[in-house]
Image (cartoon, rainbow, N blue to C red):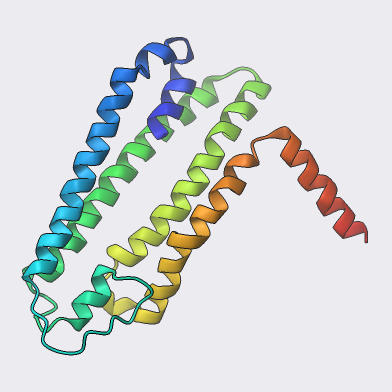
Length: 195
C-alpha cells in the first residue's frame, strides 16, 4: 500500500503503468515468498526445540514465545533466537520500504502549491500510516523485543491487540476518509456533547 500511495501521489499520470497487473503480481509473489520463508524459519526452529515438561501453553493461541517457555532447550539456543532475528529483519525491511515511500510522498506533498491538494494527499496517507504504525508497533513488541523486558501477561494483551483490536479498527480508520462518515461522526459527537 505504501508503494501504491507513493505512485499515486509522486507520479499520478503514470499510475496505471507503474501499478500494472504485472507489478501487482510481482509484489504479491514477493509477499508470499517472504511470508513462506519467515513461516518456514519459525517451523524449522520449533521442530528443533526439545519438549519434556508440561504441555499447557500459557497464551490465547500457539505463539512462538510461549512455546519456547515450555521447551526444555536453552532459551539462548539457535532455534530459540533465529525467529526473533527473522522477524526483526522482516519488520526492519518492511518499515524501511514504508518510510522511504513516505519520505518521497512528503517531499512531493510539500512541493504542491494547492492547499486543497496537500490536504487531500495527507488524508490519503494518514489512514494507512495510522494502521501501519499501530500494527508494526505491537508486532515489534511481541516478536523483536527481548523477552526479559516484559511478562507473558503483557505479551497476551499485546497479542490480543494486534490480532483483534487492530483488525477491528482498520475499517473505522479507513472509513474516516469518507466525507459522509466524517459528517455523521461530527453530528453524533455534537449531540453527545450537547446532551
